[in-house]
Length: 141
Image (cartoon, rainbow, N blue to C red):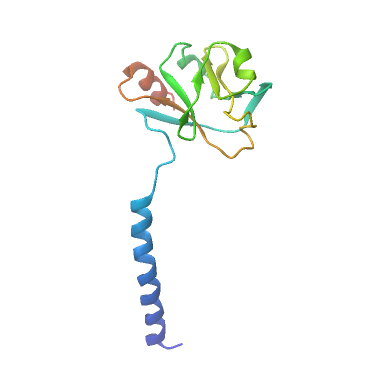
């Protein structure tokens, strides 16, 4: 293969790649919800019965999540509903609760198994929420 032939292929590849790269960076949408602090909840989630699952946090992290905190759990970009009863979570429908002794317990909106449905789950401190909650999450990692 001649140098001229190789250089022409490089030029063709660059001519196709550069516009595609520019387009993809301009059209990229961040899949995480907006918030002051956004932390993805990693699998596996522990099944608790019915449609309820617990996000397993690192040791000591549960203590940083007080029951009445200003945290919200999201499935992809959609917030789940905060409830205070385990029974409502176990029935499904996209509910969650945060308890200091249990951590984050939630159900998916369609009652599917969050370990297998391919969706991402996030815990979010919204913009403008108290610094202490946000600082606790950041400083714990």
